[in-house]
Length: 239
Image 1 (cartoon, helix red, strand yellow):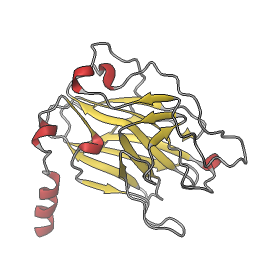
Image 2: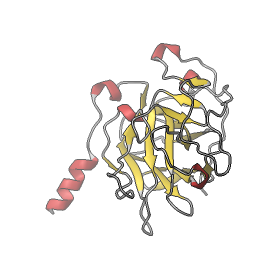
Image 3: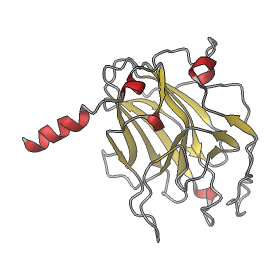
């Protein structure tokens, strides 16, 4: 009974007034119910999910595109029926209808020695335990993919990643990940940028030093900057 009460207390964790009353909110600014990162990297400390940086405290870059807001993750070995790396957010009763983010493999200049040719991550969005979006496996050479999910009426939003054949160099990023009370995202998630690569993914090359200045910028907008145009994106809902 005690365990059940404790779990119930966790699940009902609410967001602060500035989040609850906002038209949109970035996941990195919200209260998280729970999160799990990479617990046992070789020769290093655990790598928890990070807010507004990649796992090593750097700006978030995906294939040359810079994101001011977002999450950093590293894939974890998964047990059957369980998610390895994830973040849970309580959105119950807040009126949020849409989740959106750019996803892909995160670049890093600090993590020298990573073999980006082995990076492979699948991004999954769940609402109350049900998958609503699953991407194809993302490789380092893939451009950021815009994913959009309908989260209307949901209680618990989970963002999770799954490794490919291994977890080697599986640095994942959710660029500008947010929830919105509208289905019209406007400038919150611009879709008119064409990212340029800032690292060379050449087979066998050292790709540990991205350029210091991003070729494109997807900065966090202010509430007043949102327009009424809708982005075009394909959200991949699982059957």
